[in-house]
Image (spheres, rainbow, N blue to C red):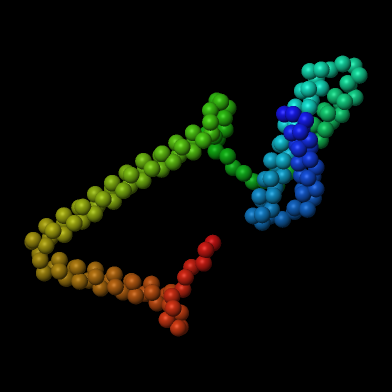
Length: 185
């Protein structure tokens, strides 16, 4: 981090302290702001750690007051970060933390979860297709053995489907005949 980044991190930390006093709610915007505050505090802490590293690496007796000041600033920012993190409720799967501990990319977890979902979806689709095929085959066999009953069954199914469609349309119909449209959430 260069001095410009250090200044930016310090400015972000100062803005962070001002924003924290104004945000006391629990709405979605407040949750985003709380997360932003914690992120800014982390950035400021990283800047302070870098400054502390530079001070320690070039330490001499005359730089002791500066070293103590930077240590105190780091402790205060860590305390501030702990307070801010109490307002954030983020749940991270242990598998992600284990991947990070192992030095791997946490995006691998997301990729594995998505691949697992795709595989399970394909298995479920295969089962659904198998049941559809079984139903079709059974109807063909039943139609050969009991043509009148299968025709009656198909009429009943068509009537029930039409009734269900009519009920769904009536529930969404307005007095003037228009259909209700669900608003976006």
